[in-house]
Amino acid sequence: MSVPRLRREYWNSPTMSWWERSYLPEILRGLSITGGVFVRNMAKWMTGRKGALTTYYPEERRADYSPINRGKHVLTQRPDGRPQCVACNLCATVCPAKVIEIEAGFDPEDVAHPKFPVQFTIDYSRCVFCGLCVEACPEDAIRMVPEVPSFPGADRHDMWISLPELLTWNPQSDVAKPYPPKGGR
Amino acid sequence: MQDLVVSIVFISYAIGVLMTFGLVLTWVERKQGAVMSDRIGANRAYLRIPFTQVKLVWWGLFHGLADGMKMLLKEDWKPDSYDKLAYALAPWVAFAPVLLVFAVIPFGGTLRPGELFAAMPAVAAWFGDRTYPLTIATLDAGLLVIFAFGGITIIGAMLAGWSSSNKFSLLGALRAGSQMISYELIMGLTVLGLVLVYGTVDLRNIAQQQSATLFGFLPAWGVFYQPFAAILFLTAAVAENKRIPFDLPEAESELIAGYFTEYSAMKMGLFMFAEFIEIAIIAALFTTLFLGGYNLPFMTDDGFDLPGGVTVTLNHGLVLVTQVVVFLVKVFLMCSFQILVRWSLPRFRYDQLLRFAWRFMFPLALINLVVTVLVVWAVRA
Image (cartoon, each protein chain N blue to C red):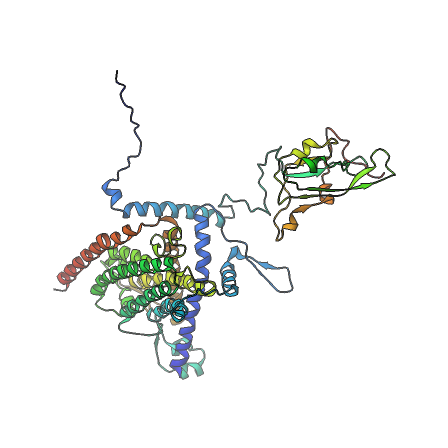
């Protein structure tokens, strides 16, 4: 039993007609396409609209970031405004890129949480945004938010984020935490 | 003395215009390409007014300046070449003829200083009734001079490739040589038809003849006399300038940067600058030969000579300004068209390039010439 061989029919045949082979008309068609795009986009720019798909990155942010985008880290705060972090170093240990550096301090005044971070820095030039630090944290102290940090800079040291910036996260309410912090000790 | 003053003014105008075109075209090329492909393009470079925080961005217009500064400040690395003189000379040999060509291109009508400075009698009296055509060198053989100087550019490319002691440079130079020689021939043949029609190689005379009227309603532009030659000429000119789709000598996917691979800093910048100025030169030449030169349709040195016998006389100063501005606008539009071509068409293969020259354009140019000869002979007889 012989099966008839199926040969696919393409809508555009690979051979060129004499019109296409005479070169100039097709070149003119191509030029009119690109020229048309130019005129259309230029008319948009001239009338004050945006004639391009590009986002001006540091000045403009795209609006369609996912709500669960892992953009940057934040440290949550206790009701008195101090970081929730107990400097246990679990996040720094689990981090595959080894970007988290924590320097622990001792606070004898706070009996419940005597250990606290003096320094908490994250190197975003190496961070892979995997979110393992968030999963490792026993205190729900580190989280990731959709916003991205302001990266463009002339030096790689501009890509380190330290404690003051990590503590700027301050929403009006939160399901797990008594936000906003009331302040004072 | 008066002639000297006028000549110095013309020369500084020509150099200023060419340099400005060279600088601005680097920006126009990027920006137009960006707009054509839905991008934004160069828009970051700015000039800051000293002691203030006012930044002049102007849609990135200063990117050309920034590029120039970068070229000047970079290390001028030299290869261990056996022919240091040729290596140092090549960029200048490529650059100087491009500037020289503009000397014979008319960029305006006839200047009559005595009439222009009528409000200032001292100046008017000093100039008397002298007249100056707005060309740096008014030569009878203008077109021939252009082809003579245009040919020198090939030597620059060949010298650069030969003296760099790099096989990519050498290959690029060989490609540049054969390509430019082939296409220069076609350029000459296409212009020959126009020379037959106008009966002169004097560019000023050609520009003036285009103020006339053709068939009672068309302006007597070269593009209406020789539409076929206009297309062939423009194609050959783009090929002569070694730009996409004819940029085989510097095809970066095959030859790194072709004949200027071994050049760095401002020497490489000179090659690039020469290329951009040559865009403007080609546009100026095309404008002069095919697009009525510095005149609006039906415009002469005295005003408008509209079809139907209507004559409008204009003030001399107004005519001069109109002619100079019209020339610049036409040149800029032609530059813009060349950039459109550069961003639209894919590059040829090298065998296709030479076959295109010798088996497609060369016969067409010959046919065009033969037909022109027959028609001119029939009309004159």
